[in-house]
Image 1 (cartoon, rainbow, N blue to C red):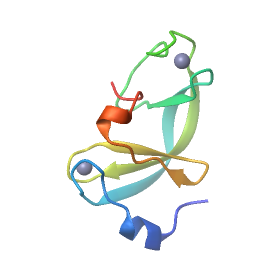
Image 2: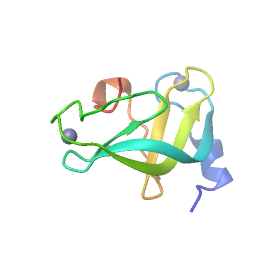
Image 3: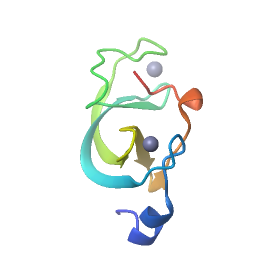
Image 4: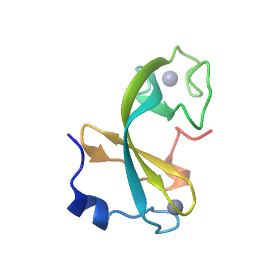
Length: 91
Ligand SMILES: [Zn+2]
Ligand SMILES: [Zn+2]
């Protein structure tokens, strides 16, 4: 279920306050143990950076910042918009 255009209108990048763009069908690398999903377009990892475990390819939704090129996953219809210092999924 894509997020509503009303919500998209309100959401802004937590780092630069820029507008974000919604995309579906994007590839992620998921570590089920750590519950971390890396965005395949930005991170070409073989193993999880935290635990060294296997990563599974999954498809999901993402919000992309038009200003600073950061990305934020949407997990179970909830946009996860954390600043860089609270994230473990960056490469
Ligand atoms: Zn892991
Ligand atoms: Zn931004």
